[in-house]
Length: 322
Image (cartoon, rainbow, N blue to C red; front, side, top):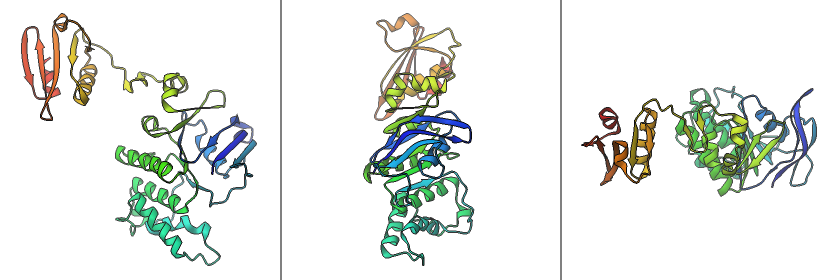
């Protein structure tokens, strides 16, 4: 099942956030929707999920009308869960309620779906924990498990990694990518996590300046300047993924090596204010050269500084010697 929009305009009252947008969210894809803060990412999610009426245009599922059923779209919003005494297991079972009848009794199939969602998100160690006892990351994982248990072809999430540490942010984005590919689901994530979106998304929807939405794979939007135009980065080079450091030293260093040891050495020297050259016919021209060498998985650094040679065991020692 896929979701389509036709000439869709969204917003509130007389405030138009996006207009005349034509989008498709297809199964087997992880799509990240990005844009500056306050641009209307949450409003788009709510409109596509049928929780907010569009100002104009249509949203439909595989050519059908726009009256959605909870068996078709699962939504994870940023709203806080107020049932603090509910357990993780109980919250995950809420995903099966659209399939129950008036007595809200879970069938063996429902229970199997709940257990499968808990296993997929690896929540088995905290199923008896109450919501009030969870960390932000655990709560987000629980909400995603509830959406998985709902077993819909489409899942939409609004800022699922907000306020989480790096490990939890990476885990959630990897999980969503896995769900889209392995379970053939269409997943839309509204996020401001630029670095993670660039590395995990199959497709990016990028809020444009003219109430439009740009679409493309992450690499194309980086190379054609779309991200730079929208976010207007200050001191950050998106093409290299690095902060642009001020070269406050007058010394140029010839640096050579391979692997991540070389990359982290280059980063440290540039951060410390040196200009780095890695391709030169005559390294002695620059007076200082550094060779990153890895032997038996252990790195060391050879520094040639004005006819003196030093063998160093850490980047910190290298910088101090410079």
